[in-house]
Image (tube, rainbow, N blue to C red; front, side):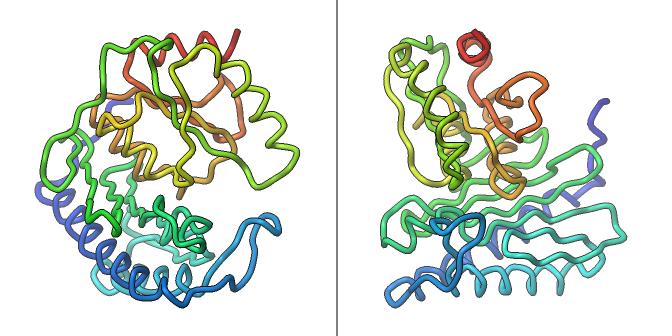
Amino acid sequence: MASVPAPDGLADSLVDIAVTTAQAAGRLLLDRQPGISQAATKSSPTDPVTEADRAAERLVVGAISAIRPGDEIFAEEGTRVAGSTGLRWVIDPLDGTVNYLYRRTGWAVSIAVEDDDGALAGVVVDPLHNETFSAVRGNGAYLNGERLRVNQPVSAAMALLGTGFSYQRESRHRQGDLLARLLPLVRDVRRSGTCAGDLCAVAAGRLDAFLEDELSPWDWAAGALIAREAGAIVTPLREGADNHGLLVAAPALHRELARLIDG
């Protein structure tokens, strides 16, 4: 189905809201990081939540609800707000919580807004590096206002891949098996700890491809749009799979990696 253009000015207004709100959440996270500690866990004992995650989510949800009171909201730390406008905000207030907890780089704020045709606008903010990635469907991807394009042409043998791992032990066995098959066939592999950041890295040419399975919508909603608008192909990791994985790369590299993954 062809994408339906947004009403004039709507998408730009939405991306402006996302940028302002994500940057504010980023400042909050920077302010709170020095004294941070784990508050709870989610999917496993190694999957943490901090009070900063929750505070950032409250900030983002509060700001968006005040400006767009009829929109649906779906956020990682549990906020669910029903909507009536046909727009849905998908929020990860802190993607890369383990890195944040350990005071490492590799964490971000991710905000996307979707309509019936998928992601309409997306923003990923890396507060530590003062980087704001943004995209509007059909209008390209940008880093601090500069247009982004994926690396191409790149063969699999020369490709730098990004990936990530589940917090579930059984899933890690499967993910490790796939990585062991691919590692001899590519230049190298990086694991940053933030899916949103890795998708933006593909858009910016800092990675050639990204692949991971068992993702949640808030992990990729904004970053996948940014990568796609920079020229990447974004598909499920395996054709017909239902484990919410992604394979993201420039067109020729995507085709080559898909054959290797399915082979």
